[in-house]
Length: 234
Ligand SMILES: [Zn+2]
Ligand SMILES: [Zn+2]
View 1 (cartoon, rainbow, N blue to C red):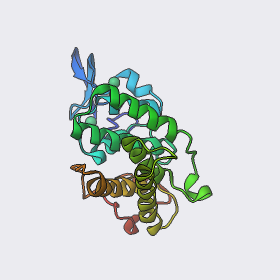
View 2: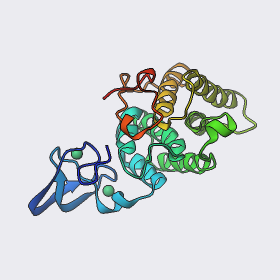
View 3: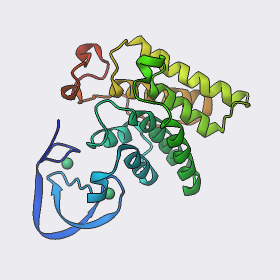
């Protein structure tokens, strides 16, 4: 799955054209003149190629029009800067959830931007290995961050505080039920699924979330639970 010379979005071969043509970058959605794309038409600009993980997540989410958090998670997870496992998933989860909600609600650009920045600042404080060392998987914390940002919860609020903590609890419960070892893909998909159900139930936000998730990252994960993982398969 490490497509060194192929398209990292879909794995197909890259095609070099005789002349530059307009191409829209999958991540920043900007048009560039380029003579390279993959057989399926994917194009990623040079700048997005080399962005750091959280930078990429923020940039992509600011421009995405998707209402499906799983679809966005896959676009991001296929980029080489999003590692098989890593704390960038702690921001990825709230970022795609907030973006999906904002696209459903047609939130204005200023609020989208400020919500993503808040989520990123908070998520970056949740360090790698939080799942095993603190008993608090960062993908689950990410769902709590998303609810906190959406509802404007603070340590002093009542209902918003309840919802944010309940969200994290729900995600952690689902994640713990599958046991370890850690997998940032499995836990992100579980957390996003729990969040989509929770948003519908408690916030009245209905997201068209992909239900039948097939992970496809198995080959990169030595500790994959394989058949015991609900997302195993291609
Ligand atoms: Zn491709
Ligand atoms: Zn780009």
